[in-house]
Length: 93
Image (cartoon, rainbow, N blue to C red):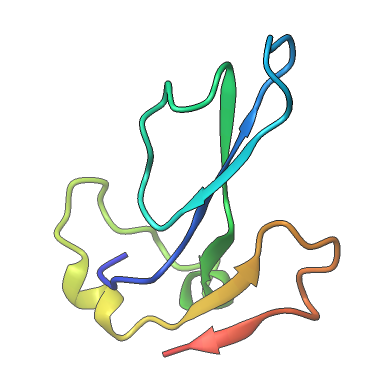
């Protein structure tokens, strides 16, 4: 998206593990084998609000360098693990 944003990854053990349930949270992707049969989820997700406002405009080419375009784009910060994301959102510019 052209912007560096802070996020966390939540890694949990999957179904059928021999050990008990475990949860790991990190600011970087961990080794896939750190927890047995695991799944990873983002703590936050970011939606590009300028794209959602201009849905009718033509999309840029897949391989185009759109970093310059994205520098001015604002991102909507949302909690990925909350039931009602609209209450916990804040705009990042």
